Image 1 (cartoon, one colour):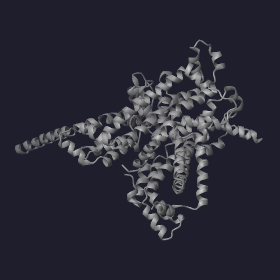
Image 2 (cartoon, rainbow over the protein chains, first blue to last red; image 1 turned 135 degrees about the horizontal axis):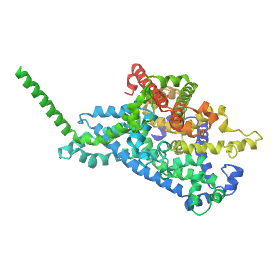
Image 3 (cartoon, helix red, strand yellow; image 1 turned 60 degrees about the vertical axis):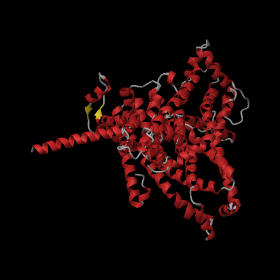
Image 4 (cartoon, each protein chain N blue to C red; image 1 turned 180 degrees about the horizontal axis):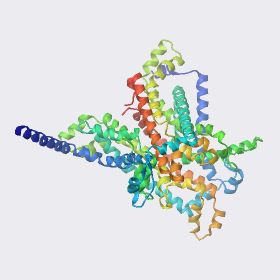
Length: 303
Length: 324
């Protein structure tokens, strides 16, 4: 049977080879920039300054990484901020989304349509950047706090609708009814029965959310001034123009900032920070890829 | 007379008890949506009220933001008039619409073609590997991508300039010459997003019933005919849905692409400034709150009209493919 199927599907040998080569090249183009950055981060600073970025460094040196772990106080601080925001943000966001979506998925919730539109409408229309900025900074007043990185992106109407569809399609109504007959309240039914069944789908949304928080720099660009709350991504934006950030912390080590700037492997450090902020994604994502794809497919189901 | 009054009274008490019962019965659900509703109110609906700023000459005064909002003078459509009388309005609208239209067309054509080609590959393991590599850039932020681009385009250290030098050609000052940027931005955007949409369409192709292809083969259909009459018609609903969504957002540029990748280089603004970067700069750099809000409102409003209109057209042509 499989043999027969294969015959039905196969294209000509020439076309197969052409496609294979084409995608080999395209895949290479997708990955090469990251490899270039990795190689640049382990290039000797002087070699990098004279030869430029290259896939094949003339002289290898790990001084950028050594520098970061020894005296890159700001970089480690930012790494901590990113990890904290990602973990806390994901927990808050997924909890809020799951509860909201579950209530919408229940046919016996009287006002489910109203609350559905309340969320859906925000996908169609918004106040725009300036009013949002003013509300966050002047009304809610979380400017330059860690919450400015977590709360403004904590809910996404699209995820609510996707998760509602998950609950509707993957949890049989009969199970919920049985639990209710046994006297379980809505919360208990949700936490002890629905949640375990739909864990894979919740994991998908959680993965998207985690990625969103890890990669977030826009909230920081708008709301964060102190280096204390600067996430990695935003640090990368800042150090492009201002290497003083790193120098400030270097001078605390006792060296004068003049010395520090001379000895600091600044070019390679930038590349090393890019590697540090990308590597967790690059390592984890091949394993999670199938969940992402599952999420994409369900997302295509209309709301 | 009296009886009617009593009746009315009974009705209202009945209604009230019914409401109370409803609330009690739905209490658990209401508690579940409460955090989300609070969030939606604070971060989405409160800013929507803030669009009144677009019609005001907003000035800070003592007594905080709310007070200044009430104190600021109504000026009708002056902010909008000012925006459209400037040359900026034309440039940012042209750039936003132009880039997005190209992104939609190229993105759809290439990702559908890529998905069909990947699906036809006989080496399935290799095809999986390709998908993983192509999907990778989608997971990176624009900040990271801007560094990737910089390693290629940097004036004295960039790979491309080094290659040009090695070939005996002149270096190009990439971040100062606007003429290269439409091409660069289109390339980079597709580089980041093509893998995602390809995998998306591929998932849809895998969902097509194999029986269609088998019977087509028995009838002697060639591969091209199978693609033309089976694969593409099956992808049509998905293509339409994604295009409606994209057209609804055609007025919203991807801020990260236009802000981070060109490194805020001034000479490039004529080809990199879009509505979103214009609003951001208006807010953070020049502090013109009234006009930035007006620009944002214009963007939201046109986006809203566009998505409603596209959906209405699709509904009329092909009811099943409308999204709402």
